[in-house]
Length: 240
Image (cartoon, rainbow, N blue to C red):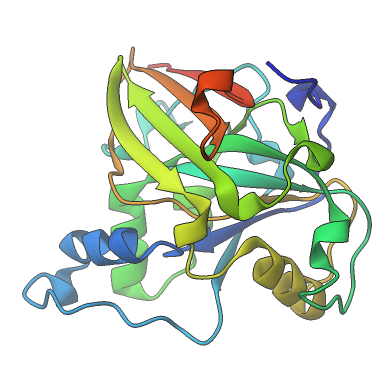
């Protein structure tokens, strides 16, 4: 394992997330979108990335996640895992070009964007915000991060997620529809980034349901360097 930035030291003001940033995941999402179930047409790339937020309180500090309760009742019956490449912003960024964007990165990690899928589907149907399905407590899990200088190009990063020992997701950053520098530049112009912010860059295909007692394990690797071991890892436990 390389020298890392401890996840316990993270104090983001914002957690920016990217939706449908992998083509095959964008297509698999059609099965949960009623208006698209009978239309398996290829999803066209949008002109701008789909951005949503998780509040700082969504960041899990103990490696656990669970469906929240309201008045003793769970607010969802269908929580999904979504493994993603995480980017740590190292300094404030505003109106940054794609060419300069990588100079604002402090590190990279692997993370989980836990999602209440049934709540999300209902919100989409009603045209309501996603905050409840994406921003609930302990919905964001992040590994220790490897310093940016250890990664020559984020496009060569690979990641893998297992659920109870079985591989469920594999991701290649080079397959993102909007690359890391494009995302950083876009966010810096529209919102402005602050040092310490986290960027969840999107999940590949293979998302699925978790149950209490499930154990999730994710690894981040450099392409063509898997024999050297992972850059960083993440272990998570689904509580009841």
